[in-house]
Image 1 (cartoon, helix red, strand yellow):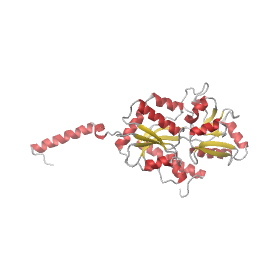
Image 2 (cartoon, one colour; image 1 turned 90 degrees about the vertical axis):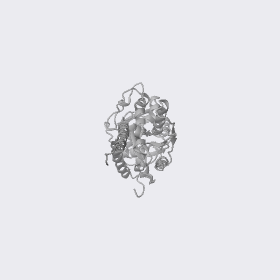
Image 3 (cartoon, one colour; image 1 turned 180 degrees about the horizontal axis):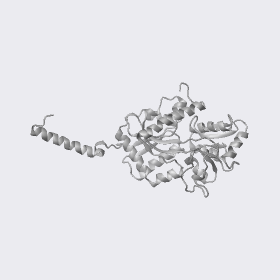
Image 4 (cartoon, helix red, strand yellow; image 1 turned 120 degrees about the horizontal axis):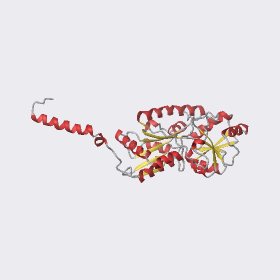
Length: 341
């Protein structure tokens, strides 16, 4: 470009000035925010861990006015969450839909053959990892996981009823892992629509045990109706506040330390539909960072004994890729893969 004339010089100065403003004000240049209500899809039924988390998030966003537009929670749990995931898959270039994910992000397409893969979505953030606990009715004779395992081993085939959320999902994967420790076909697995129903069935003694998430059974534990035997992790919970009059989450032994070599945690994350721009992703990352800083969220994390992990960007994508393979291997070993998978 020639710069010998005053006109060209003034033009270049003006252009450089404008470019400088943009370079020093990326937020002004790239900012995006919703212009209409945001549908928050839950690929699960009401009362379960995903439902409780999504509604808590909605409440915090509303209470603290973290977003100008309202957030509308919508349950789409049909087909083990396939209904919600397919809606998100077809929400291309629609930043006004987000979904809270659990491990059915991986298990549902593998088990059902539904034409969906996590790569059809845009990862936003891991909010936390959810634990699983082996629960029994408080009136059951088992005081420890060792007592429970010995009773299962001594029982008739399929004598023990294990309640769980959905078929060929996380709860049944854990049940199959337990069966390998107790002898084949010792459990009759009974699927229910959500974690709330699972806890209710255990309180009513319609099943012998469950592997519910902590938040799905904490109220029944507080009420003295259920007893936790172990947590499926290699480390005890970091949450030390008393949940009952005598116990905190950290008082529950890990299944690993009790000799039950089963370790499994579940994703609680946020995704958008395909075609989301970096600016749109950044808006939701910032939104959920603000949520994570609130007292309500911190209390929810402690009440539900969540593993505190917040992850975004390439780190989150690598974690997803690793867990996609993990779930494929687990599902294959359990015989849960749909034909052709």
